[in-house]
Image (tube, rainbow, N blue to C red; front, side, top):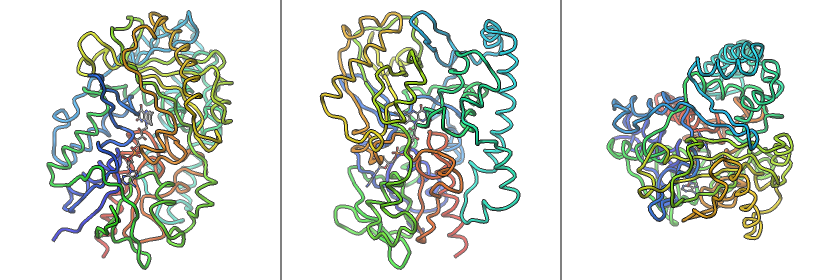
Length: 499
Ligand SMILES: Cc1cc2nc3c(=O)[nH]c(=O)nc-3n(C[C@H](O)[C@H](O)[C@H](O)COP(=O)(O)OP(=O)(O)OC[C@H]3O[C@@H](n4cnc5c(N)ncnc54)[C@H](O)[C@@H]3O)c2cc1C
């Protein structure tokens, strides 16, 4: 008889780990608290408008495809993709914007318009960062750290040195380019994983390099297609998903996990894989602090959390101007102040915003002739902010974000054509997905919370228990959460074979 596995949560990493285990002969059941799969990769559907709730930018498409291909499927049948060019538009000031291209000739023309020195610097940045990425990928991102000697050995320590990650992202970029617009263009992406370009480890300067060399893609139907397609594949393989089923406890006896509690009932399993946010799960699902090793309530409270976001999902009653793209960035006038505010716990008075308009290329997401507009402003997570958002604060902040949207040509009178509006704050990320402090990208990937120092996929303090998702190794972002799913499934299978 097949061994049984319970997965807690049908987020990106929960679904992907469940697929891998089911495909390798385990009998897998997923319990998800919400009425739909996807977790942060959820979809809000209202009045014919369909909004991706969280992730929107598809990078490293091969990692998405591999989830389907390792199960012998053609990924095109599940997540048909198209490559974007330009990848996004950046608005620096009211009058200055640029479309960022991955086409070498277009990119070079744009860079040479700045200076030949910065063009050279940009291409040096690409090659040197690609080199560091290969080290990170082979020796850290795709490698589990079970025991101290997996990290504290001469080879790994040498590779850690070769990563040269002690500098911050902004300083690292300044070694290559001088132009302020280019500096911004290559450093704001640390916000994709919720850390500051001025403090976060410089390794995250790999993100714009990855966008440029592997491209930015769009999955038809939006990111939610990835969630529903993973659920479809899992069920085709024989797995079961229970929605509206909140797990109340992971049962641990004699330092061994053997099931979960749902609706007061114990459901037994040979293995448990937890996809729910790690710090939340420690505090709420493992009831006895003694079963958690070093992850006491005090330790969890002291950990560093990534920033959060203020999101507006707007259904527009007409198409917006041709000056917008699928992905759009609008910078704050004072980006440095904006960053300080986010990480000092203040709601930025002049935010930078990201706008996603999938209906530019996909008519399936809105009624005919109408537009979906997703607007995101990074804001502090709730621990640093000190308190939850009140309705008055939400109403006030909404006005600030609307003013910023108006910087984009053709959106000057945006409020006139809003037919539907829904707001998500850090409060929602905390209550809807159990993300600790509403930190949208989980535990911050600081040096002391990365690689060996991040919570690992195989739990060190109880047998038969595994973790996967943003707050555990290797970290946040869809491709990285998918890698975390692979690591967790591999760790479980490695242990199983050893018995
Ligand atoms: C606003 C936003 C924008 C983003 N943009 C991008 C992007 O453009 N590109 C990119 O690659 N990444 C992006 N990300 C990051 C990416 O979305 C996440 O890293 C990834 O989706 C997280 O997946 P996960 O499996 O770790 O967690 P989750 O999606 O949070 O999954 C955890 C699941 O567990 C469930 N759960 C929690 N508690 C319980 C319980 N007690 N019982 C049962 N179920 C439970 C939750 O409901 C959830 O479904 C973005 C994230 C956000 C929030």
